[in-house]
Image (cartoon, rainbow, N blue to C red; front, side):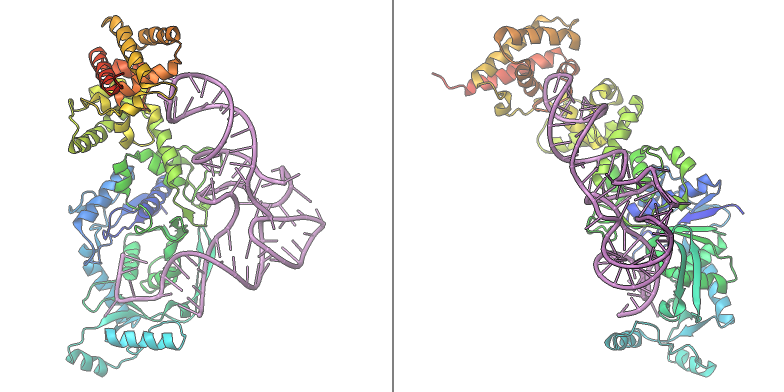
Length: 504
RNA sequence: GCCGCAUUCGUCUAGAGGCCCAGGACACCGCCCUCUCAAGGCGGAGAUCAUCGGUUCGAAUCCGAUAUGCGGUACCA
């Protein structure tokens, strides 16, 4: 039997961290076992499903590198695979047939209860401190009674009969789980009165129809699994194996939610977290290799992943750890790859600064980025931080805070003196010798001659040419800026400071 | 309320009866390196293994109860 597993997101919101993690585990398991990974869209909640969300989910999964073997490839376009279509709203006849089969064998029945009746039942049960469950008002209607209700114009929902007894299964992660069907809330609505099928029904019909062998999903479905098993049996289908993953939690240990955490994959992507880091991080949220290794590529994860090693307790989403992993991955990226990924982030950052009044003198290109890689690669926690590191190369003039031009041990007069002296030393280097190696020596010498700490001199220069106190190494930075602009900015800074000097 | 699942440093976790007075990583602190910021190296602090009882020569590991947390309990998914 070859393994078939699936991810079944519903396009009622952007791709969620939890969905991505579930998709990853399904992908890893399928690939590890040489099986098939299916993507199915559960869009039966028509009111909340949109094509835009569908696009976000597909884009996100593609971006993470979780390629599926069967399913829709592009939002709104037809799906591919032997069990197509893979959107539930395009599979309606299948659910109708399945429901008919259950009806024909009296495993399900039409239910004419109104919303009001149901609400009243529930209220009464609550008042009597009883668990809410369907009272079975329509469970044994005669043909005549049904006709009478139809004649009134009532459209029935369809309920699946929950038989008495206990349902047991062996969860791959949690072991044996047994639940009394009594606790399931009574007969289950599988088709709404408007004819559209409900989740618990479609998921089973589709998993059966698509020959899914392993259902790997969040722990929030554990309690619902008995309903699914009962439906598989009623449909005469093989019951798949189940593996319920621990939940990803907000810092307060509740199920991770948009309300309390950043849950959209697209938002992390937008910040410049690299896909390798997100995949690595998500894999480690609930699973560990058992070795002391922490950094894994997708391929390595496929090789090592083992469902039985998945942890069973919930895991808080730890952004600090994600950021660390992101930095680790950025440092491991080939420089050409990094340069390419950085361009759009820098452009966006510069565009935002233009909106703030800055003048961008040059649109960054991959060619511009290449020589900067050694300066920035180990300083980026996320791609989106690139602007803070190199914006001064693309903006002119830069904004300089005069207070920062004066290092801690200096006064303003010394700063002017230092900047002017540095300017002269640098100007003395010709165009040809404007290299980091050639600049550091003479400037250190200058500091020594004047009795300044080299660090103070360098800080004054740093602020003068970048407007910042934290930058890549100074001499490389000057080279990247170029001789002319370096001298220009030193002049400008010295001039600005001099104007502020008290005239005695 | 009822049902289910879970519980090891702040966080992610290792640990499948003696190798554990519990190991690694993130974060934190200190030192080193150093022109800033990072990165890197070294070191430190941090867990009565939720609690109680049992099984055993021996328990984080097995069993039971309790507590706490979370999840489910829809004509949502």
